[in-house]
Image: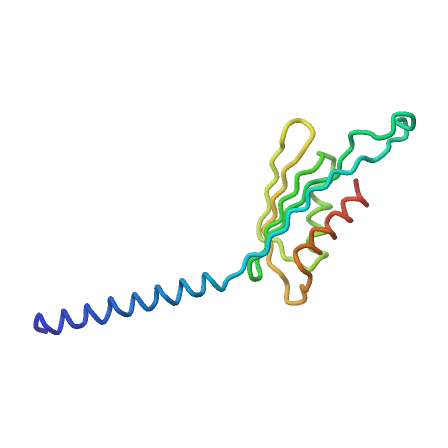
Length: 142
């Protein structure tokens, strides 16, 4: 190979790489990330709070983000025995395959749960529906 052919091959390769960059940038632009944060605090009357009106009990803060078939769920909730097992079971019942989960205590009475999951082929709900379903599940077991 002489210098001209080496230089010609290098130019072709650089042009190929530039085209590849453009393709990847277009794919990144097309990729959508759907995100929903549902932070509602409900005050529930406690049995011994009838004359006071409401107690300080609150439901969890739930955030979910989806990108193609991947879903990230973050839940900030009260620390209770068995809450993680119930949350993971509920996520799996919604046709999500759990890839990773982590739990961090926050203070003495709360947990920060992060779950990364992938949508099964039969998963068809929007992120807002996912968050609402998780909130309803928390109403049942908290």
